[in-house]
Amino acid sequence: MFSSKTAPSAADRSTGATFSILGADLVVRGDISASSDLHIDGEVTGDIACASLVQGERSTIRGAIAAKSARLAGTVVGNIDATELVVLRSARIEGDLLYDALTIEHGAHVDGRLSRRTSESAVVPALAG
Image (tube, rainbow, N blue to C red):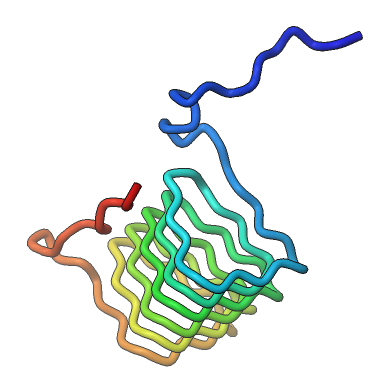
């Protein structure tokens, strides 16, 4: 009747084995820092630092983004620093992009400077805990 599975331990959470979803009806005012992966469908006003970010089409982020990987489909007003960055056709970005690998789909709107990270550049800043 009930499963014998236990809840994830703190060790599981610290290795990035979890993810968080911010729903479409959620509005966040403030910075977000997570060692986990994030999926954002709502509105965020503040900086975001996470392992991996997926942004929904109707989502709006006003602030800087720092992530190992980011897949953006909504509106972003702020600079983006990601090792692997994918900008989907529905994305509207106002800010500078710093990346190692970049994919921009036809139809996406990017208004800012695009800079490929050099080997001397610092990698995405460590996440504050």
